[in-house]
Amino acid sequence: MLRVVVLGAGAGGGVPQWNCGCQGCRAARSHGHELFRTQASVAFSGDGEHWFLINASPDLRQQLNATPQLHPKAGALRHTPVAGVILTNSEVDAVSGLLSMREGSPFTVYAHEKVLAILASNSIFNVLNEKNVKRQPIGISEPFEPRLPDGARSGLEVLAFAVPGKSAWYLEGKAHPGGESGDGDTLGLKITDKSSGKCFYFIAACAEITDTLKAEIDGAALVFFDGTVWQDDEMIRAGLGHKTGKSMGHVAMSGDDGAIARLADLNIDRKIFLHINNSNPALLPASPERKIAEAAGWQIPADGTEIML
Image (cartoon, rainbow, N blue to C red; front, side, top):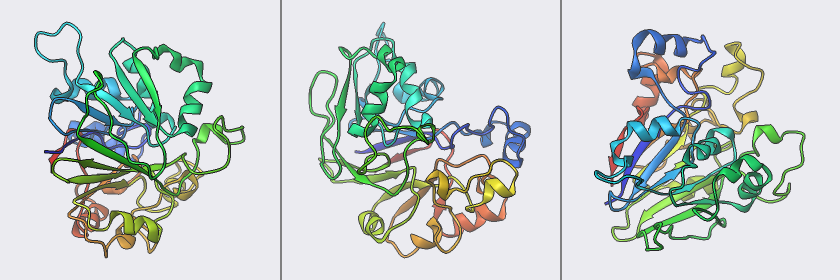
């Protein structure tokens, strides 16, 4: 059985963001933890004992402590069920949590060579001793089976595919350590349990929904999809920034080119928005935007949501 846990459903900064007084953050502070969201990541397992993370958010330590499935096993002095971390991009939201995993437990970091080049160029990631924490490059459209710390097979297959996006914002105007050409900065993942054939997709960043992407995810049992903003100029309208969603590498939920409209004709059993920004009104349960999303078959998940396939 393939098990998936939403560790965090928020975008960068989470909800509430520490320095933000927008409607969503004010509501979260006044209404309690039901509106809180940590930064986007999920964990998945084929056996319920060994788990792999997709991205390591800045909130990872908090997420691990809040998720019983990821606690050390009873009676063990040092132990973690986490066998590996798969990175889909090199944004701060996706990689900085790796620094919270520096205490010597063995696991593998899987990422495209362009992302691994960014980690290698920043010496702070050397706190992850490569004797314990291996770094394994993954190729686009090259399926692989992530291994357990002892080298045993996991029974899972991961397929990475290119998604329209952009390199990390902190590289704007700078030379990319992994080179400027080619895909690899933004990946989607297809995760399959090899014994059952059950699978899900994870696409937490997407600047444009192409026909190729639609064909890839059509017929899926479960899709996690970029839900950063409700409308493209949302942050500008709210006075929270000067960039559009698309300029940051994120397609909007609404609009003719948005996720709700563009994916409406696909046969997907369960559609879940992830990486939802604090500015996005769909976070608020009573908002018209939430009602529109849910009427279209989309779920806005809480942290800790578990799904079994």
